[in-house]
Length: 263
Image 1: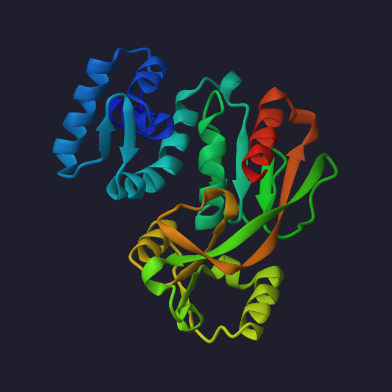
Image 2: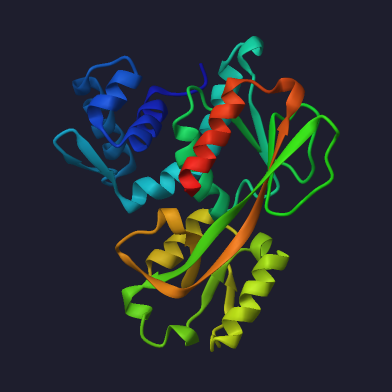
């Protein structure tokens, strides 16, 4: 009801990266999906995907739109569901950060139905899963899984020379983490003299990084050949709290997806 056809087609195309797969998931054929994509591109005035036969590659514009649109799409999908179907709520105090967006996007896209994702400083009894980059106090009905995010320091090739003097792009939620502070101290000891630049918007942060405005810590599993990996990594703890009484196969699939991404 609340999700437009254009929004659903765009989100599905971005997640599937394949016209035929997207059409199958939408219970359509390829031609109407292609037409809807063309109408959306004409309305926006920008190219969203580079089409190579059935394979499609999102443009930078498509990436920016997707990261802005996904939280709203998930919320609208949740409203569309019948109350009996609203079985998965994911909350986090870092839900709007670049790091968790980078982690959750491939994880959530493979689940059968999108979860309701919300920003929350503290856990609630009706949360199915709560994710945090630092340990928190939780109700007794929650069980915790701790894992490590391996973060590589990356930069554009143009910044590779004298990278020790370049700006480090980060977010406020990261700057106050003890493990980030320890990593920064180690980085300083290795000769890093650059300044920190705080950008509290995942889209703008990624845009600044792609534009070559500084260095960035990224998940080691999401690095691209377009950028250079610097000789420095740090391990950021990730805490996943699962509501035991509400636990079902959906929760297990989510946890498996996270572990597969981090392998």
